[in-house]
Amino acid sequence: MHNEILRDREYITRLKDAIYEQYGVDATEITPAKRGYYGETWKVRENVGCYFLKMDYLPFHQKNYQRSLTVIDYLCECGIDFVGKIVKTRKNELYSHFDTAIMGLFEWVDGENVETDQTKSAEYQMLCQIYALTKPGLGIPTASFSNDAAMRFYEQWEALKSAPKTDANCAVLSIFERFQEEISHCASRLLQLAERCQGDESSFYLTHGDAGGNFFIGDGRNYIFDWDEAMYAPLERDAWVMGCYDWARKLFDDTLKENQIPYQLRLERLAFYCYHMYFFYLGEFMKVHPICDKSQRIQEYFEDGWIKSRIKFADTI
Image (tube, rainbow, N blue to C red; front, side, top):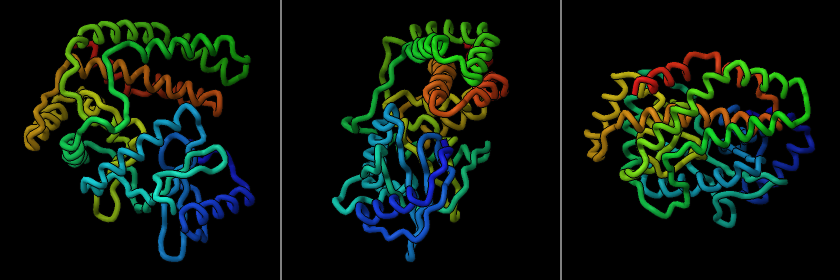
């Protein structure tokens, strides 16, 4: 949510004190760092360096954040140096608490969030290093082929109908009514593809879920940040967003082969994830909407061409 809640001087002072108490970092300045979707993100400066502070106040998301720190720590222990380096607390813990937030501190990386067709080769190479390190017991969820994402969204839609009739809520309900036919079509297709893919849940790997959206370039190096949605899943979970393009599917498969990852993309799984993620993103908007108005973002989601092009591809499978 990019620090959408303004913080006063007293809050910043308390935060500085907490960072020193828990991490031993004597912060001289704390400024907003607009990275990530959930929570508050800050750039923390001290005399000898900078840090990235990510704070998650949302109860429904905090567990994901905690699990992501375990994943990042594991990857760093395995020699992966492009996922963010956690700064542990004085007690050697991966995170701490501030008010009701879960707080994690990282080494700062000067970089820019960039995703283009040209960055896909580097992204897929980096992901293959992650896939090779897949192991059980990391405490992250395992994906399943189901229509749960659509069912949860419909429950959120029904709940909104009985929520207070604010301008924001009415705007979202109006948008859903406008696109009701599209939503219904995607829900039906998701169920069909889920049933088609069920029965073969083999070859699951450690996946990111939105590596392209978190691809950073800084200091001449590439990074993949924000592992909050790490999950054991088929590799189509990472490939679906570009899977509508022949060249991207070939590049993904060729990169897997080059890195000796025994997997080849399956069209039915790509299509499943197109519909699944369609509802996943709607569900994420709806989770945050009661806290901060997402009506404009939801409207843009339906009107922008990027998600429609993925659905158009999935409709051919």
